[in-house]
Length: 113
Length: 113
Image (cartoon, rainbow over all chains, first blue to last red; front, side, top):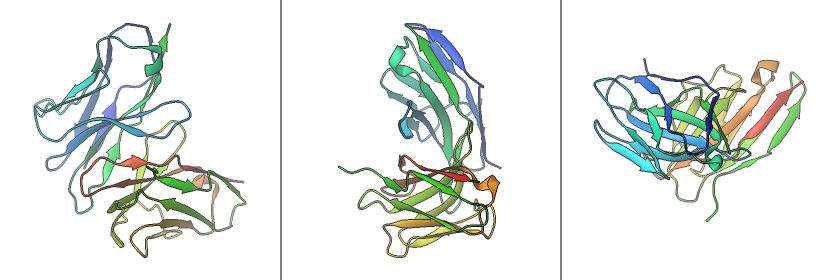
């Protein structure tokens, strides 16, 4: 079946530190991969996406590369800010007749000044 | 422009009561999704509409859950004979078409006493 596994949180970093949040997936077919972010008190919003192998999604200094050989889509940022504190969700969608989206459990990030 | 709007934001009901949750998607969005999000977890897929057609309802946990989108715009998720385990945040999302990034509402937090 289809599933997403991401590293457990919380992750606590100091400002300007390097961030990696690991995400691996299992899927039948050829999934599209997404990272969504939920800032405190706000709804889920798309951060970045990649639709095929070796694609790199990027936005707001965050990047993730679709690695088919390792079935991974790790999220990275070179220098985090306090304003990046949020919950990050890795997700995939596959055309199973409905493009159901499967989310990981989420990783909470705290960035200290 | 207006985003996805959900109402009510909060709903408290006694066990055994029926509830109805409303979702107003972004105008013109073809695809509409409902998710259930338990505390500390990622959203779990419930059902998917393409226009007025319910193409996937495999995530609905029981026959007490029913969703409709009769005119291809507003959608209602109904839960009959509510139980305590139905307590969660119910998220609605819409997208312009198949396999496009989803835009999420702020959710309805349902508490069953």
